[in-house]
Figure 1: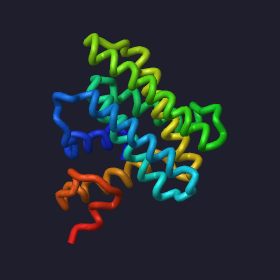
Figure 2 (figure 1 turned 120 degrees about the horizontal axis):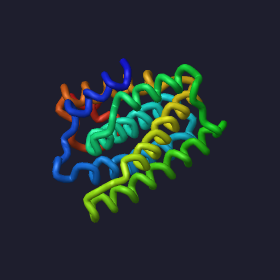
Figure 3 (figure 1 turned 60 degrees about the vertical axis):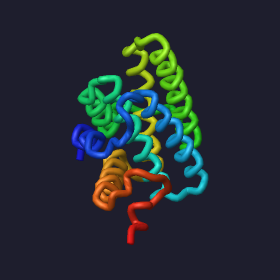
Length: 178
């Protein structure tokens, strides 16, 4: 599964009011990045990959909300996996901090977008690229890759859709259906 294939899950599982658009998806980015950051010190690869997938879902939904070029981000992932793109951070904690810093920048831009009705897409793309590269790098530091992360997240969301547990809260709620 590549990023373009993964991105189709957004339309299949997005259950937020469209009138909230970017505000909702960026708030989700903030929440899920915090959960990812909390998972990292526990050194639980599977849990951290699940949280990374949740961040990726909200990142992708935000790309849709701002009508960004998904093909560009798919190419960026390919560059990362080909070894043509790297991050200067060697440890996962610094990557997590970089991720949160870039998400904070997107949050600030979204606040101004809501107020003013416009956004600097060039600058937005720069921060979105950094978030995506940080996610790829986090997966790499977890001895995995973004493709495995996509698959885990995709499978979880399909199961939640099938068990009618997309609404709600809590990890593994798709597993708790009787």
